[in-house]
Image (cartoon, rainbow, N blue to C red):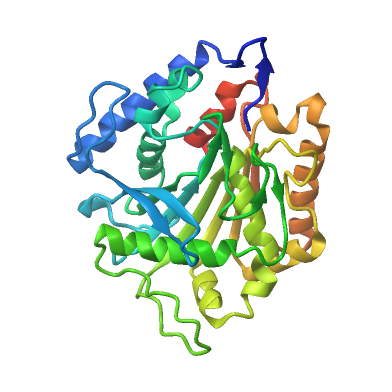
Length: 341
């Protein structure tokens, strides 16, 4: 989540010299990735040619559309995504990423004075970073459907939200169904050989493609989507099609979650967390002092600790790490968790 300061005429996004170092590091990752995949990147600002941008992809409801960015894996690196095994797979492993505030397509960030200094965290650059983190996987970056003032991401298609993206969670908003349909339509538009079949609405759905697996990653504001998915788990399991889809989700990553609301930055409802624990999905929480040690938002740290402890008590497969714990809280390190997790 962005923290901004109000000036008489505009909102000024605060940064430091450390962001330059992060950008240079990302540029090195981009050069390495593009050399492996045959893509071309010029400097630190150009989008990689191998990234496919899909616009206005519909979900299960044609009123809910999202722009999606796809980076296909290099053929020689199509291995299992989770980095815990090197067994060759059939190339049907997928990672979906939900970015945070101010993150947008490179070209659009370049046009916004507040966003331009942070182009190294554009959707294209993050896609390349994730391809390095999850070799052999299809990387899908989901752009928020709205960006208020070109800064504040709003995932209205996944969770009821206000203009600034603060969520109002519920048990039946349709985030899981939207993700399932959005991913299937994106695969079809991209021409992938084994796309998810369309939702049929029947009680006896056909099987999903062989070898299909999914990892879902949320960063900062993007974590509101993961939270909404958790709240919907119980109801979604009653739907045979959604149950098949959820059975293929192998891991969920929360990366320094934050939003402008005054609570529910992390899921604390025991029933909802019980559903998550019983699912068997691996849960990973990576945080920085920027979110969990902010004295002005002390509830974030309390909720994070409650989230971890409750899942541990429930026997969930959960891991957690505080990054940059010996450094002052900074927006730069908040973004850098994308590189470090």
